[in-house]
Amino acid sequence: MLDIASIRADAPGVANVRHFNHAGGSLLSARTLKIITGQLEREAGFGAMESQPPAAEAVEVARATAARLLNADASEIAFTSSNSAAYGLALAALPPLQRGQRILVGRQEWGGNLSSFEAKAEAAGATVEQIPCLPDGSVDAGALKHMLDSRVALVALTWAPANGGLLNDAEAVGAALAGSGIPYFVDAAQAIGQIPADVHKIGCDVLTAAGRKYLRGPRGTGLLYVRQGFLDRLNPAYLDVISAPWNKGPQVRPDARRFETAERSLALLMGFGEALRQAEDYGIPAIRQRIQTLSEDLRTRLAGIEGVSIEDLGAIRTGIISFQIRGWQAVEAMQELARRQINVGANGLAYTPFDIGARGLPDLIRASVSYLNTEEELAELVANVHDMSRMR
Image (cartoon, rainbow, N blue to C red):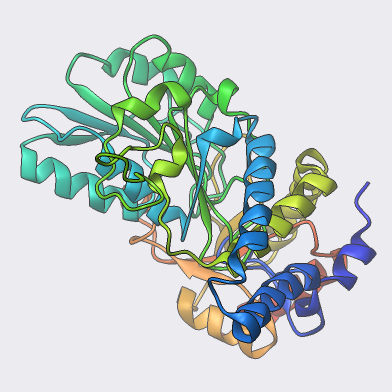
């Protein structure tokens, strides 16, 4: 059981807002904040370079923690400035696309990834194709298997989409690709920290995550997992003294740190390490159970309000609830709730272009639940949405 009272006592933000935007950026713990500011104070007081050695040791502890959370080896983990940076670094390191090659993606693929895929495909004369969905809206791994041929250069899956609530079956996709040699990338930005993850069970070659979301780390942090046996298939777009130390020529590192650079915020990475440690201490299975209980309760209660429509898919769902309030644009509703000290998100076409387009939806209000939310906060959100639903 999670000690929610203790967790909230260590989260300064809960005194100011009812926060339902954990998929955008969660609330830091006081301990994480103290570690970040402490390192910045040391750098200000004694010099940035002089304060580096003990901080660098803490970062390596964080790397080991991240590896345990993913059931990976520490040598397979690189730290980056964001999920997008991690994904972009790995994508840019793949061999150039050739004319006629194919990139296969789920319908809920993150819009930023799609922009990169489309740009690369257009330049090379390749194509980006959607994998069919199962009736619940999730990726159909069986259909994917029938799409595979020698022209497929990459299969990409957003594990927990930005909206729509569903959780794709990442393991089933990995099983469909087993033995094919086709690169398999998993964008786990919204999954890591709320869903137990095992990269060996998933069978992915690359997995990325954001620090600021469900892991409750600081903005400006992310992680990149690259399977050890896949590293040699990746040629980093650029190198520096960390990724390729000079010894009679550049010596590219044999581990995932070939994607790291010397210039990085040690303060943020130390804070990220504390957030990772807390996630490990609380236990992701316990976190998952609480988020699932709270989010299903919230879905049910919102669905019972006249004028509110839930737009979630999936037989298995995450803590992300997407909905509309009749008469309200998503951004307008988000701003009105913020005026009432309740944080939610608003997103749509730019975030999941294929899915939003296929379903003909407008931008959506997104309430994302974390384990530190309470039943009382859920009730307050529901009451305010009910009030707004009667205003127009």
